[in-house]
Length: 403
Image 1 (cartoon, one colour):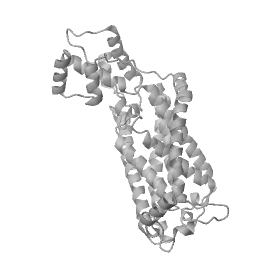
Image 2 (tube, one colour):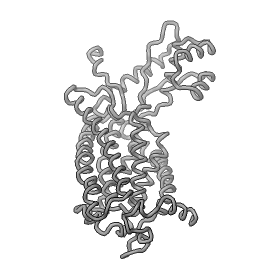
Image 3 (tube, helix red, strand yellow):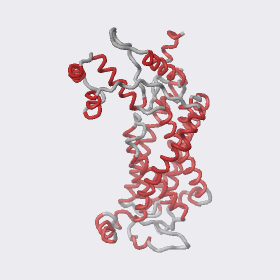
Image 4 (cartoon, one colour):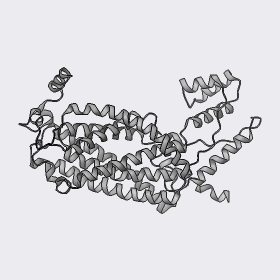
């Protein structure tokens, strides 16, 4: 361990990269007034904490979230299971979930089935793998609890700190600023949680902004890790607090959407939109980024770590603008067009493909027809503003025909 630390100090953690001129890592190893100074080795603990979060989530979703979903009336759509055809199953798992036209023709010849039946089989098989409402509710419930606890705990630890009210205090005496035990655990737990989100991203419900989410998680992990090592903890706690302030409203809105509580869902989504737009487009750039870009230069000359930290913050701000654009477009469509045709930030992998009429001569059972009807009725029942968050098709344009 000591040899690895010496190697990192020689090649990565050089003083001139991460600390202001004239300051050395040795200056941050002493304790003052019962506090502690952050060290890069502390971040090792975030990996076991991330696995602990994953295990806790597994228990929470099954013991608390799943029963709560049934209590709130979350219903899963009836889906037709694909028939057991080994050759098609092998192709589905090893080659492609959406075969091309030439592959459909080839598979039809190998299995002795028509092209329509091959296409129908793949459609049923894809729907079979898509997450149901209960799974999506459990994910949203877990994130809601974590974000709410993180925001409450973060606000509780910062409410009496001077840098919450006077941002110049973030840099006064930097970098020789001892870190309180509460802020140490606030940092370590937040980084462990975001690391757990990144580790679970491949099994969670996949959304259209999947790439942006991955970039967000990676940027946040780098931001937390670097700001801790370079003792940007004071400004870092403000960044965490701003981000946690709106996320639990979004997750609670999703929960009520999956439960079919349209009025509550819409109310929470409006609150989320207002909080998000104010905190991410007003507070974050005008207070946090202004503090790191402008006020910090009053206390020390610029160096590599200064530019690196601000670059990460600007990446986050670019993502904020991207998501704010989607939210505003969503609100515009709802207020002025009276509908939202498609989710702007949807569960890409959760949209169930609608069944097509079977061609003459194909076998069609009552269970298949019932599954199709239930699928369409489910779409009708879930039609609210937060269709945007679960990617159900909006069928308002078909209502005149239905009537």
